[in-house]
Image 1 (cartoon, one colour):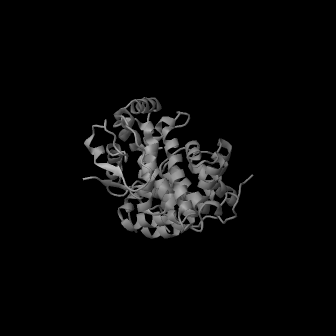
Image 2 (cartoon, chains in turn cyan, brown):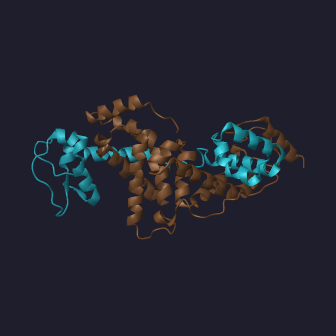
Image 3 (cartoon, one colour):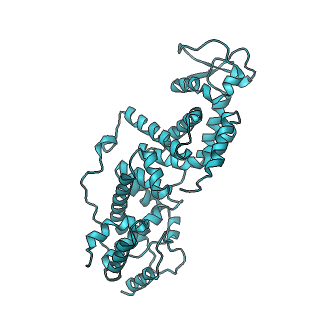
Length: 135
Length: 229
Protein backbone atom coordinates (compact mmCIF):
# COMPACT_ATOMS: atom_id res chain seq x y z
CA UNK A 1 0.00 0.00 0.00
CA UNK A 2 1.37 3.37 -0.95
CA UNK A 3 1.26 6.06 1.70
CA UNK A 4 0.12 9.57 0.86
CA UNK A 5 2.10 12.79 1.04
CA UNK A 6 0.06 14.11 3.95
CA UNK A 7 0.84 10.98 5.88
CA UNK A 8 4.55 11.51 5.27
CA UNK A 9 4.36 15.15 6.42
CA UNK A 10 2.93 14.05 9.75
CA UNK A 11 6.07 12.10 10.43
CA UNK A 12 8.69 14.48 9.01
CA UNK A 13 9.86 15.65 12.41
CA UNK A 14 9.99 12.18 13.92
CA UNK A 15 11.74 10.93 10.77
CA UNK A 16 14.43 13.59 11.07
CA UNK A 17 14.96 12.63 14.72
CA UNK A 18 15.13 8.94 13.85
CA UNK A 19 12.06 8.25 15.95
CA UNK A 20 9.92 6.31 13.47
CA UNK A 21 9.89 2.53 13.60
CA UNK A 22 11.61 0.49 10.92
CA UNK A 23 8.44 -0.39 8.98
CA UNK A 24 7.20 3.16 8.76
CA UNK A 25 10.66 4.37 7.90
CA UNK A 26 10.84 1.90 5.01
CA UNK A 27 7.46 3.10 3.76
CA UNK A 28 8.50 6.72 3.95
CA UNK A 29 11.79 5.98 2.22
CA UNK A 30 9.96 4.23 -0.56
CA UNK A 31 7.62 7.19 -0.96
CA UNK A 32 10.53 9.62 -1.00
CA UNK A 33 12.21 7.74 -3.83
CA UNK A 34 9.47 8.79 -6.18
CA UNK A 35 7.93 11.90 -4.63
CA UNK A 36 9.89 15.04 -5.32
CA UNK A 37 7.58 17.20 -3.27
CA UNK A 38 8.00 15.19 -0.10
CA UNK A 39 11.73 14.90 -0.72
CA UNK A 40 11.94 18.67 -0.98
CA UNK A 41 9.82 19.11 2.15
CA UNK A 42 12.08 16.73 4.05
CA UNK A 43 15.28 18.33 2.78
CA UNK A 44 14.08 21.83 3.45
CA UNK A 45 12.80 21.01 6.94
CA UNK A 46 16.04 19.32 7.84
CA UNK A 47 18.13 22.13 6.45
CA UNK A 48 16.04 24.75 8.24
CA UNK A 49 16.62 22.88 11.53
CA UNK A 50 20.35 22.55 10.88
CA UNK A 51 20.61 26.25 10.10
CA UNK A 52 18.73 27.63 13.05
CA UNK A 53 20.43 25.20 15.42
CA UNK A 54 23.81 26.60 14.42
CA UNK A 55 25.60 28.27 17.31
CA UNK A 56 26.08 31.41 15.26
CA UNK A 57 22.34 32.06 15.10
CA UNK A 58 21.68 32.20 18.82
CA UNK A 59 24.58 33.66 20.68
CA UNK A 60 24.72 34.86 24.23
CA UNK A 61 25.02 38.64 24.44
CA UNK A 62 28.64 39.82 24.62
CA UNK A 63 29.86 39.78 28.20
CA UNK A 64 26.80 37.88 29.45
CA UNK A 65 28.78 35.27 31.32
CA UNK A 66 31.20 37.77 32.84
CA UNK A 67 28.34 39.92 34.12
CA UNK A 68 26.56 36.90 35.56
CA UNK A 69 29.59 35.67 37.48
CA UNK A 70 30.42 39.18 38.64
CA UNK A 71 26.93 39.50 40.05
CA UNK A 72 27.36 36.22 41.89
CA UNK A 73 30.64 37.36 43.38
CA UNK A 74 29.12 40.66 44.34
CA UNK A 75 26.24 38.90 46.03
CA UNK A 76 28.60 36.69 47.95
CA UNK A 77 30.67 39.62 49.10
CA UNK A 78 27.64 41.68 49.99
CA UNK A 79 24.81 39.66 51.40
CA UNK A 80 22.69 42.82 51.77
CA UNK A 81 22.50 42.45 55.47
CA UNK A 82 23.01 44.71 58.40
CA UNK A 83 26.43 43.62 59.45
CA UNK A 84 26.86 42.25 62.90
CA UNK A 85 29.82 42.97 65.07
CA UNK A 86 31.44 39.64 64.56
CA UNK A 87 31.60 39.82 60.80
CA UNK A 88 35.13 40.51 59.78
CA UNK A 89 34.58 41.16 56.10
CA UNK A 90 35.06 44.86 55.39
CA UNK A 91 32.98 44.50 52.28
CA UNK A 92 29.98 43.44 54.33
CA UNK A 93 30.40 46.24 56.77
CA UNK A 94 30.20 48.84 54.05
CA UNK A 95 26.64 47.97 53.27
CA UNK A 96 23.35 48.22 55.09
CA UNK A 97 19.71 48.16 54.16
CA UNK A 98 18.11 51.49 53.46
CA UNK A 99 14.77 52.59 54.79
CA UNK A 100 12.32 50.93 57.03
CA UNK A 101 12.40 47.49 55.61
CA UNK A 102 12.64 45.94 58.99
CA UNK A 103 16.30 45.15 59.12
CA UNK A 104 16.75 42.18 61.34
CA UNK A 105 19.00 42.84 64.23
CA UNK A 106 21.15 40.48 66.12
CA UNK A 107 24.51 39.07 65.30
CA UNK A 108 25.06 37.02 62.19
CA UNK A 109 28.04 34.81 62.36
CA UNK A 110 30.54 34.54 59.55
CA UNK A 111 29.49 30.91 59.11
CA UNK A 112 25.93 32.03 58.51
CA UNK A 113 26.98 34.55 55.90
CA UNK A 114 29.04 31.94 54.10
CA UNK A 115 26.35 29.31 54.30
CA UNK A 116 24.17 29.16 51.17
CA UNK A 117 21.25 28.18 53.39
CA UNK A 118 21.01 31.62 54.88
CA UNK A 119 19.66 32.52 51.49
CA UNK A 120 16.27 33.78 52.62
CA UNK A 121 17.92 36.92 53.91
CA UNK A 122 19.48 37.58 50.54
CA UNK A 123 16.23 36.79 48.82
CA UNK A 124 14.49 39.27 51.08
CA UNK A 125 16.95 41.98 50.24
CA UNK A 126 17.09 41.33 46.52
CA UNK A 127 13.36 41.96 46.29
CA UNK A 128 13.92 45.52 47.34
CA UNK A 129 17.41 46.01 45.94
CA UNK A 130 17.95 48.98 48.13
CA UNK A 131 21.44 48.78 49.38
CA UNK A 132 23.50 51.86 49.94
CA UNK A 133 27.11 52.23 50.80
CA UNK A 134 27.74 53.57 54.24
CA UNK A 135 30.69 55.84 54.14
CA UNK B 1 22.07 18.32 25.17
CA UNK B 2 25.36 20.00 24.56
CA UNK B 3 28.17 18.86 26.83
CA UNK B 4 26.01 16.92 29.26
CA UNK B 5 28.04 16.68 32.45
CA UNK B 6 28.80 13.60 34.44
CA UNK B 7 26.08 13.43 37.07
CA UNK B 8 28.34 11.91 39.73
CA UNK B 9 30.89 14.65 39.35
CA UNK B 10 28.04 17.11 39.46
CA UNK B 11 26.62 15.63 42.68
CA UNK B 12 30.07 15.75 44.23
CA UNK B 13 30.48 19.36 43.15
CA UNK B 14 27.13 20.26 44.73
CA UNK B 15 28.12 18.55 48.00
CA UNK B 16 31.34 20.53 48.10
CA UNK B 17 29.57 23.81 47.39
CA UNK B 18 27.13 23.14 50.21
CA UNK B 19 30.04 22.28 52.45
CA UNK B 20 31.46 25.73 51.82
CA UNK B 21 33.44 25.68 48.57
CA UNK B 22 31.17 28.21 46.94
CA UNK B 23 33.63 29.12 44.19
CA UNK B 24 32.84 25.75 42.61
CA UNK B 25 29.37 27.07 41.88
CA UNK B 26 30.82 29.08 38.99
CA UNK B 27 31.78 25.87 37.24
CA UNK B 28 28.55 24.10 38.14
CA UNK B 29 26.39 26.78 36.58
CA UNK B 30 28.47 27.48 33.48
CA UNK B 31 26.96 24.70 31.30
CA UNK B 32 23.47 25.94 32.24
CA UNK B 33 23.99 29.55 31.23
CA UNK B 34 23.02 29.18 27.59
CA UNK B 35 19.84 27.14 28.09
CA UNK B 36 18.75 29.37 30.97
CA UNK B 37 19.19 32.51 28.90
CA UNK B 38 17.55 31.13 25.78
CA UNK B 39 14.60 29.73 27.67
CA UNK B 40 14.14 33.13 29.31
CA UNK B 41 14.46 35.05 26.09
CA UNK B 42 11.92 32.70 24.61
CA UNK B 43 9.51 33.50 27.42
CA UNK B 44 10.27 37.21 27.86
CA UNK B 45 11.35 38.20 24.33
CA UNK B 46 13.52 40.99 25.56
CA UNK B 47 17.29 40.70 25.79
CA UNK B 48 17.84 42.99 28.75
CA UNK B 49 15.05 41.46 30.77
CA UNK B 50 16.11 37.93 29.88
CA UNK B 51 19.63 38.70 31.07
CA UNK B 52 18.39 40.17 34.33
CA UNK B 53 16.05 37.22 34.81
CA UNK B 54 18.94 34.84 34.06
CA UNK B 55 21.03 36.47 36.77
CA UNK B 56 18.17 36.28 39.26
CA UNK B 57 17.62 32.65 38.30
CA UNK B 58 21.26 31.80 38.96
CA UNK B 59 21.15 33.55 42.34
CA UNK B 60 18.01 31.58 43.19
CA UNK B 61 19.64 28.36 42.11
CA UNK B 62 22.55 29.08 44.41
CA UNK B 63 20.32 29.99 47.30
CA UNK B 64 18.20 26.90 46.89
CA UNK B 65 20.94 24.47 46.04
CA UNK B 66 20.38 22.59 49.29
CA UNK B 67 16.90 21.75 48.04
CA UNK B 68 18.17 19.95 44.95
CA UNK B 69 17.61 16.28 45.58
CA UNK B 70 19.24 14.78 42.54
CA UNK B 71 16.01 13.24 41.35
CA UNK B 72 16.41 14.97 38.01
CA UNK B 73 19.43 16.29 36.20
CA UNK B 74 20.77 19.45 37.73
CA UNK B 75 20.19 21.35 34.50
CA UNK B 76 16.58 20.24 34.32
CA UNK B 77 16.08 21.52 37.82
CA UNK B 78 17.91 24.75 37.02
CA UNK B 79 15.75 25.25 33.94
CA UNK B 80 12.55 24.77 35.85
CA UNK B 81 13.67 27.58 38.17
CA UNK B 82 14.41 29.71 35.10
CA UNK B 83 11.00 28.93 33.68
CA UNK B 84 9.29 29.93 36.92
CA UNK B 85 11.29 33.14 37.02
CA UNK B 86 10.31 33.93 33.42
CA UNK B 87 6.63 33.11 33.87
CA UNK B 88 6.52 35.05 37.14
CA UNK B 89 7.86 38.14 35.42
CA UNK B 90 5.47 37.69 32.55
CA UNK B 91 2.53 37.56 34.90
CA UNK B 92 3.66 40.70 36.67
CA UNK B 93 4.26 42.53 33.45
CA UNK B 94 1.48 44.91 32.56
CA UNK B 95 2.22 44.58 28.89
CA UNK B 96 1.43 40.92 28.57
CA UNK B 97 1.87 39.58 25.13
CA UNK B 98 -1.25 38.44 23.38
CA UNK B 99 -0.05 34.92 22.82
CA UNK B 100 1.33 34.30 26.27
CA UNK B 101 0.50 31.65 28.81
CA UNK B 102 -3.07 30.47 28.60
CA UNK B 103 -3.75 31.74 25.11
CA UNK B 104 -2.44 28.55 23.57
CA UNK B 105 -2.96 24.88 24.05
CA UNK B 106 -1.86 21.77 22.24
CA UNK B 107 -5.25 21.05 20.72
CA UNK B 108 -5.25 24.42 19.08
CA UNK B 109 -6.25 24.10 15.46
CA UNK B 110 -3.66 25.28 13.03
CA UNK B 111 -2.40 24.80 9.55
CA UNK B 112 0.85 22.91 9.62
CA UNK B 113 1.02 22.14 5.91
CA UNK B 114 4.57 22.52 4.70
CA UNK B 115 5.71 24.90 2.01
CA UNK B 116 5.78 22.96 -1.21
CA UNK B 117 9.00 23.50 -3.04
CA UNK B 118 9.66 21.42 -6.06
CA UNK B 119 13.21 22.57 -6.34
CA UNK B 120 14.80 22.92 -2.95
CA UNK B 121 18.44 23.60 -2.73
CA UNK B 122 20.13 23.52 0.61
CA UNK B 123 21.46 26.70 2.06
CA UNK B 124 25.08 26.18 3.06
CA UNK B 125 25.76 26.73 6.72
CA UNK B 126 28.63 28.91 5.54
CA UNK B 127 25.95 31.43 4.57
CA UNK B 128 25.44 32.01 8.29
CA UNK B 129 28.43 34.30 8.10
CA UNK B 130 25.90 36.69 6.66
CA UNK B 131 24.32 38.45 9.62
CA UNK B 132 21.16 38.85 7.59
CA UNK B 133 20.54 35.13 7.40
CA UNK B 134 20.98 34.65 11.15
CA UNK B 135 18.56 37.52 11.72
CA UNK B 136 15.96 35.93 9.43
CA UNK B 137 16.23 32.66 11.38
CA UNK B 138 15.95 34.40 14.74
CA UNK B 139 12.95 36.41 13.63
CA UNK B 140 11.17 33.28 12.45
CA UNK B 141 11.66 31.58 15.80
CA UNK B 142 10.69 34.74 17.65
CA UNK B 143 7.49 34.77 15.63
CA UNK B 144 6.43 31.32 16.85
CA UNK B 145 3.77 31.00 19.54
CA UNK B 146 5.46 30.66 22.91
CA UNK B 147 4.76 26.99 23.55
CA UNK B 148 6.43 26.11 20.25
CA UNK B 149 9.28 28.56 20.68
CA UNK B 150 10.25 27.12 24.07
CA UNK B 151 10.39 23.61 22.68
CA UNK B 152 12.46 24.63 19.66
CA UNK B 153 14.93 26.43 21.91
CA UNK B 154 15.40 23.48 24.23
CA UNK B 155 15.19 20.60 21.76
CA UNK B 156 16.85 21.91 18.60
CA UNK B 157 19.03 24.73 19.79
CA UNK B 158 20.14 23.42 23.17
CA UNK B 159 19.84 19.80 21.99
CA UNK B 160 18.07 18.53 25.08
CA UNK B 161 16.38 15.15 24.82
CA UNK B 162 12.61 14.84 24.88
CA UNK B 163 12.47 13.70 28.48
CA UNK B 164 14.58 16.53 29.81
CA UNK B 165 12.80 19.17 27.75
CA UNK B 166 9.44 17.89 29.02
CA UNK B 167 10.66 18.00 32.63
CA UNK B 168 12.10 21.50 32.26
CA UNK B 169 8.89 22.79 30.68
CA UNK B 170 6.60 20.97 33.07
CA UNK B 171 4.81 19.10 30.33
CA UNK B 172 4.62 15.62 28.84
CA UNK B 173 6.99 14.02 26.36
CA UNK B 174 4.07 13.62 23.97
CA UNK B 175 3.36 17.34 24.09
CA UNK B 176 7.02 18.13 23.44
CA UNK B 177 7.02 15.91 20.35
CA UNK B 178 3.81 17.37 18.98
CA UNK B 179 4.96 20.93 19.61
CA UNK B 180 8.34 20.32 18.05
CA UNK B 181 6.76 18.80 14.97
CA UNK B 182 4.41 21.74 14.58
CA UNK B 183 7.11 24.26 15.26
CA UNK B 184 9.37 22.77 12.62
CA UNK B 185 6.49 22.64 10.16
CA UNK B 186 5.74 26.32 10.79
CA UNK B 187 9.41 27.20 10.47
CA UNK B 188 9.80 25.24 7.27
CA UNK B 189 6.83 27.05 5.81
CA UNK B 190 8.05 30.47 6.85
CA UNK B 191 11.70 29.98 6.17
CA UNK B 192 12.12 27.65 3.23
CA UNK B 193 10.78 30.11 0.62
CA UNK B 194 12.89 32.91 2.09
CA UNK B 195 16.03 30.86 2.50
CA UNK B 196 16.12 29.96 -1.14
CA UNK B 197 17.36 33.48 -1.70
CA UNK B 198 20.46 32.72 0.36
CA UNK B 199 21.61 29.79 -1.72
CA UNK B 200 24.53 30.74 -3.92
CA UNK B 201 24.04 30.43 -7.67
CA UNK B 202 27.04 28.22 -7.95
CA UNK B 203 28.83 26.47 -5.21
CA UNK B 204 30.93 23.49 -4.46
CA UNK B 205 30.32 21.04 -1.71
CA UNK B 206 32.15 23.10 0.84
CA UNK B 207 30.00 24.59 3.49
CA UNK B 208 26.88 22.60 2.80
CA UNK B 209 24.88 22.22 5.96
CA UNK B 210 25.78 18.90 7.46
CA UNK B 211 22.91 16.50 7.83
CA UNK B 212 22.13 15.65 11.42
CA UNK B 213 21.00 12.17 10.61
CA UNK B 214 20.19 9.94 7.70
CA UNK B 215 22.89 11.12 5.39
CA UNK B 216 22.30 9.23 2.18
CA UNK B 217 23.57 9.57 -1.31
CA UNK B 218 20.02 10.08 -2.46
CA UNK B 219 19.93 13.64 -1.26
CA UNK B 220 22.97 14.60 -3.24
CA UNK B 221 21.54 13.00 -6.35
CA UNK B 222 18.37 14.94 -5.88
CA UNK B 223 20.27 18.16 -5.57
CA UNK B 224 22.15 17.44 -8.73
CA UNK B 225 18.91 16.70 -10.48
CA UNK B 226 17.38 19.93 -9.27
CA UNK B 227 20.38 21.95 -10.34
CA UNK B 228 20.31 20.56 -13.85
CA UNK B 229 16.83 21.92 -14.45
